[in-house]
Image (cartoon, protein in one colour):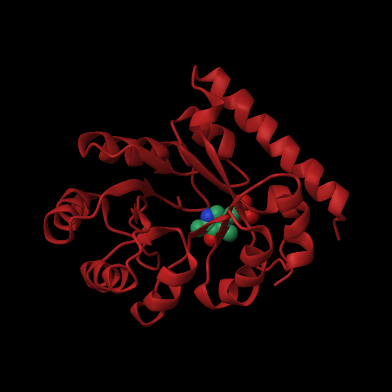
Length: 225
Ligand SMILES: *Cc1c(COP(=O)(O)O)cnc(C)c1O
């Protein structure tokens, strides 16, 4: 088990690697946001990261996030919470209340329910569309050849301002072609955000243009489950 000091050191090390990768690619480190992924970790392990000054976090389950983040938000204020896992429509109300960013918009029905709930709560979340770049049947996300149409529908039917695209490449493949594909879809649709890269490949993702990397185990250690 990693102690608090080590977690803060790991955070600093990940940040330094992001900066170096950005500079390598001729980009400003300020153009890359680190989303610290806290799924399965409790507040004891999250607090050192908040106290080290970090403010942007990601969770993949609404239910789990509801159990730990309201208290942390009350205590620390200006945190930014991203949903990075699949969102079921029956959890949209809770998700809109709790999260600032949804990275996993991927189907018309979810878009419709989100639009209605954001209006009801008078709260505009930042929205990323998840693209299933590997066309994996078990994985969420819009298929690459349906991405343009889905993005257009989000804009035309719901007036969403799409902040970015997100992908989770197949775990047993080189991620780079997936990062490149995501970037191509974003560019031809005038979308600036690119959420790609995890503990194993965030530096490659930054070099490929990521604006958001989602890093869990490189900061918090292995997940217990
Ligand atoms: C868990 C998770 C991550 C972080 O994974 P690590 O390999 O621990 O960095 C990133 N993105 C998504 C969607 C996740 O579910």
